[in-house]
Image (tube, rainbow, N blue to C red):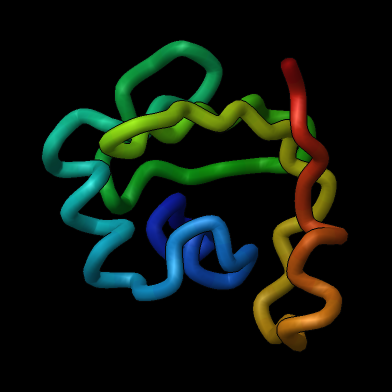
Length: 80
């Protein structure tokens, strides 16, 4: 699954266009490698996203396409 779509489906970033822009600005990393919007994310990958005031790091648990809002947090787990 594309990283921009994963970020939107998991509700880490609310809109896919915003996720795409974050990738283009160099604020998204997959396994410590800077991600492009079309970079592929797989189960087990570590995704790091830098926001204006914080950074989150998550491990990908699932890459489901159609996810309900309540199930979005089941796609990843937070890492320190």
